[in-house]
Image (tube, rainbow, N blue to C red; front, top):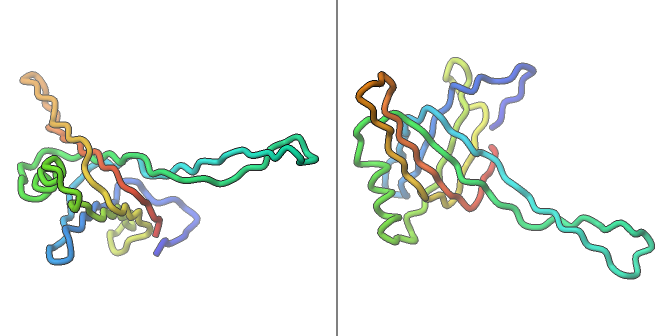
Length: 152
């Protein structure tokens, strides 16, 4: 699905899709910022006592996906994300979702690359900072933990 070209794509054309299960429609959440996409692969060093070379060999170990942070303006929609948060904080072990972040082309005609988070769940919600003196938009933050990330 990734579309290669010589010039990089702009970072501002993206959408977040949260799958709500096999029988429910997906949620296209209007986030303004996504951060933390990536993975970290551990490498262990091993050297047997009878190796002729004194340097250890590198052995690939496990990998982990960092937490993903999503930010958006408060829109008062309590029926999508907040129901999911309530399921997880209520102890549900089955409230796992697939979340896809799709980078769009400049004309929004196609998805040029996507990151698919498997078995994602919310781990932190932060409401907006409120001030009677400011003119900023009220921003809420959602942190997701997932078991796997795939680039498509």
